[in-house]
Amino acid sequence: MTRFAPSPTGRLHAGHAFSAVRAHDFAASRGGRFLLRIEDIDQGRSRPEHVATILADLVWLGLDHEAPVFQSARRERYAAALDTLRARGLVYRCFCTRAEIAASQGAPHGGEPVYPGTCRRLDAAEVAARADAPHCWRLDMAMAVALAGPLLWHDHGHPVAAMPAAQGDVVLARKDAGTSYHLAVTVDDAAQGVSDVVRGIDLFAATHVHRLLQALLGLPTPAYHHHPLLLGPDGERLAKRHGAPTLAALREAGEDGRAFADALREGRLPTGFSTANA
Ligand code: GLU
Image 1 (cartoon, rainbow, N blue to C red):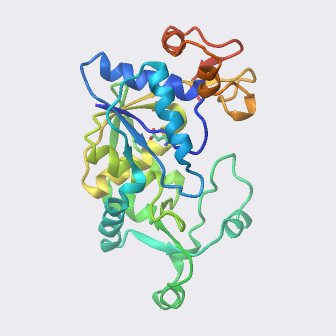
Image 2: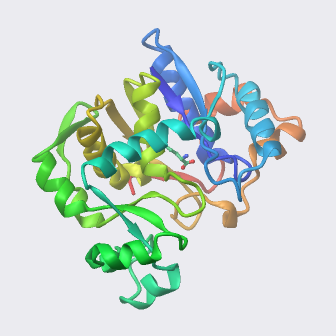
Image 3: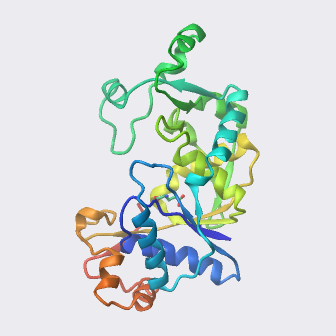
């Protein structure tokens, strides 16, 4: 069983189609199931019209999937998982703002800065005094790694040693969302019985964290199949700024979606695009 898990924060482009086709075909070629999970925990950026467009895009591409599951309807599950970790002292409240975190260290090489652990060092009285102030919950990474011990997952059948420590005390419950990408994905892949995660190699780093959370929460580990990314003409991961047409625009222009999906399957990419491992 595989899944496609888009976030409905914008329109899908060829990079999403590339990933969806791979996940779909992985399941189809093995007689397995293909799930659609709408990752809409970010209520500020998720839009119902984007959900509608995603559903239409998948029909257009000819990718049959099961009834979508919405993360926004599953908050209790994520809260329960966070409770489990909290009961074991593995998470702590963090009151830092983004600006404070950015100011506390040099600019990172892209991506989120590694959290310096400021609030991990607060004592109980300080936390109690501020408990009503806005806060997120972070994983105490060092404690979690020590507790879990060495971990592996399989990527394309090859063992990979999980090394989540480099990502520091990741957020498991955002101030605004009550959960986070890492926690929601880990809980849902297990709850939905996803046996094989087929997704872009840009999420490889996240898998180290997901493997750790699986161990801490006693959840099964799917097999992972990270795939190369579709790159724009500048060799960077295809993104909005490349101005590549969205799937919706292609559909509205009368392009044949099944033929588009077949072209991606066969490596016939739109002009200027290429694929590579990140
Ligand atoms: N929702 C994530 C995204 O749109 C993908 C999650 C995943 O495949 O694990 O990037």
